[in-house]
Image (cartoon, rainbow, N blue to C red; front, side, top):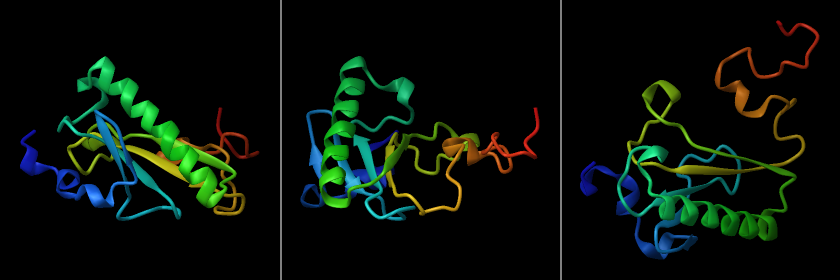
Length: 132
């Protein structure tokens, strides 16, 4: 990936919420909940599997730092944390970014299944009408 291809690298450092040697954190431009934050590696790589071990460690350290900030600011009841890898998985920006999404009781009628909801109808396997 060319540096000019990533909209994340155009975000000025003054808008970063936190950073370390390998990554920075920014508010998501299209948050699914208030406080939704992205952790972005400074190096323009497309997927998690292109990150070095040191980058991976720094990225997860920043996830922890952002969680602490969100805990203090928003007092969420839980979190969804993850990434989309490839267009088939919903990745729309070809620069790795980790979503840190604070969750609150009542922000959705039934949060059971969490990330499993990426496939409609497959999220909550605990309901009586679930297959299997």
